[in-house]
Image (cartoon, rainbow, N blue to C red; front, side, top):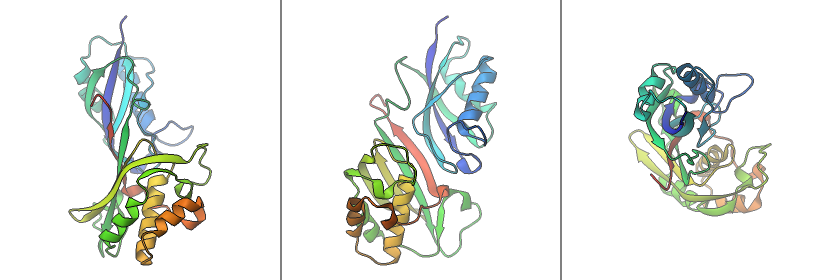
Amino acid sequence: MSRRNIRVVLAYDGTDFFGWQNQKEGRTVQAVVEQALAKIHKHPVHVHAAGRTDSGVHAAGQVINFFTDLSSIPSEKFTPALNSILPFDVRALVSEEVDESFHARFDARLREYRYYIYPQPIVPPYFRRYCHWIAYRPHLGRLNRMASYIVGTHDFTSFSALGDPNPSKVRTVQSAAFFPQGPFLVFRITGTSFLWHMVRNLVGTFLMLDQEERPPEQIREILEAKDRDLAGDTAPASGLFLHRVIYDNG
């Protein structure tokens, strides 16, 4: 029986999940997706994801792939088939057949994350789960000068999580910038890969330095020091979205 490699773009509200990856305890996005696929296939199906989002982190464009031995379902029909089973905080947006060699994680060229800040005196309850609320408006120019210092290839030890198992803390950031979007201030960052809590630690540090009106070049000093104690607090998971994943083939 022939098999096909199916790529699916997912969106999910990460609030009530213990992250993407399967765990012994706690609800995960991977588990509910694999449970839905098992119902469709009548046997277990393993999925690969482009990014292992942490507990509470959302996705607008997570990419997964899996192999199917079902010939009765056209590739594009896996979208409604999955959505008929998945819980409402996970949706399949599009599905398509790809080359058998495609791997959602290893073939990803760039990952784009966006972090949403709500800089207003009061946060509406319908935004609360999807942003980081701060009761003041930070200085956009200062934040963007800070962000410019992290572009390139650097050792991001100062912005890693305690206990991060990665042997190397060197990562390449292609772009990093803040921009206004409606009532939000959005931090957009693209790179090949990121350390555990790296984006949230960067945002927390940017906001700390801005609130204390410290010079933007201190980000470079913190980066070069390779000392987590010099950086700011980890920003809440609620503001972070895996926005999209970029591949050479589109």
